[in-house]
Image 1 (spheres, one colour):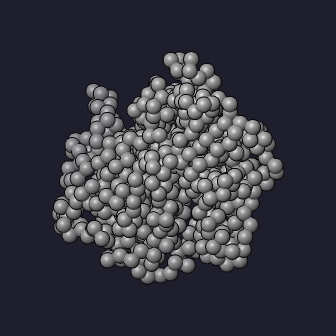
Image 2 (cartoon, one colour; image 1 turned 30 degrees about the vertical axis):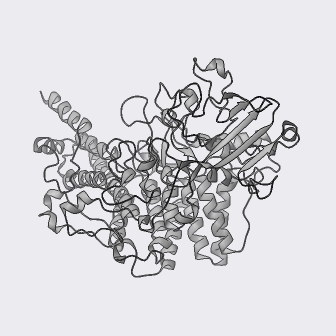
Length: 627
């Protein structure tokens, strides 16, 4: 009977919501289950595991992997399926309509109520974990470690609130201990930061290194990486006077200096680099790349980068922390189905935009120049078959840096073998986002991966590209789940956090140290060093590198807000129309009259609004400026 009761309780923990979405809920789940959990350390561990599953602000997704990626709320990607839901890009983000940041079934990122629901769960755990009886010294060690994990989870979720909304409603106790809703207020930006930092330091204290804990659970390195991310955000222009709000204490610092905060960010990243939290390194070589780069060299560097996001077993030393997806059960990852080309019966969501495609450098590190062969013409590029044979780089997708080929599927790119019913039309597996023409200009056939192809037309947005990053070459999206890892923190971020803090400090030594760290990331990607003594130039190098290195991973939404450049980088998404003729002639035309997505930005949207439904529960909570 006791064993049956144990499994009933465990099932209730694993397959039932642990708390409702009302952050003021006084009774998150049945008292019977709550009391029973704290009588068995394995049930307490299962409870904590459910808290992991709710990280990131959505009940059905964990961290950043979902059908609609956060990067589609930036200039990087285009959300084909629900573009109107990307309210951040539409000027429609309001307290009564958060779109992607609200009750979105396919996105739901940074959802206020979901984040607080999980924080409530962690607070329940921390309030009760000491009650759990321990039979052995190993049980005592596990209890201490689990406290560290709980502090990390709470720091992460409060960090999400901090990065998106600013000052948070802070609580380190279950909400049942709060007298009433009228006692709840948002804390200042500074106090919120300090609360999160305190949790991070406790996590670092209680957690082991990566080699002393099962993969996927929090480690000292994961907590220290969160600290680095947090302190860099705190040193940004957005929260240090760049944004002039009505209630400054909620979304910015009102004391201290940005220089002090930049030094703190620099030193936190440097401590990580120096090995204080474990041994981490970039995957691949950081030696100077060969010059010139051969096709084989480009492929080798490209495969190395691509494979970082396709890890399925033991993580490499670049991976600090993330989530490994199972084939069945548990959290869901269907990246190949969600993002894959429609000519494979996939859905083609989250499509790379033309500006990001043009941002990738050439293989030798030179900037890509669209109008190199026709100065001033930013829309049309054309070449005869003979011209392309003599100079392959007339094709805009040829001769590019290795990360381009790891991240972007373009017309002519090699991809998977087609499904059986499509194989007669393409026995090789070549992406077809363009159309095929006879030499007289008559259209011969639509590409299989276009919005008017013969396979599936409903999922294509027509802008000419598909996302390759995060997809697995060996997974058939229409029938199988992905099992590759979503990486939340990796060592490249630490290096570029350090580089940014150093460059923004701007002294001779710091500037060079920043460039050295940046160049490690570039060299690993097969690109030559950046060299400059000018701070403004170094800043642009750093921002470019973050955009390319972290493409589609979600960093960009935070970065363009931190740097306050949203208005200058945002543009409408236009259709890239490609014609391929029988004689080898090619034409690439970015059609300014074929708009896939209209975009605009409101200054107030640098911060997310507190949802109306939450303000109604506690009217004394102040909303963010200009809402």
